[in-house]
Amino acid sequence: MFGGAKTRHLDVLSGDDGATAGRYFEYARHEIRLSQPAIPAMLTVDAQAVRLDCLGYLMHRIGRDGRRIIG
Image: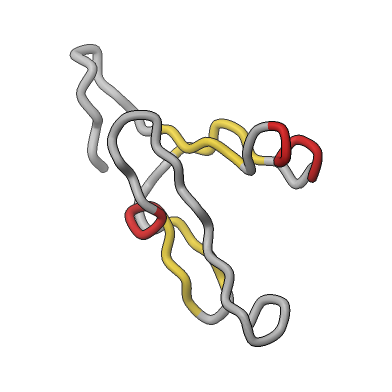
């Protein structure tokens, strides 16, 4: 496991839809993977950037009507 006997998971903070980590990520064999299609808008490994903001943002495609495009 990550860092010894502890399992680490990501915290997901949503701006408006109440998303949770389980909705976007799955954990298997010490790997973190997306559980649904998403577009990475910003990802970083810079510790200072993470402290100031976050590890990354995920986006979804939307149509001209503002609705999310699935698939």
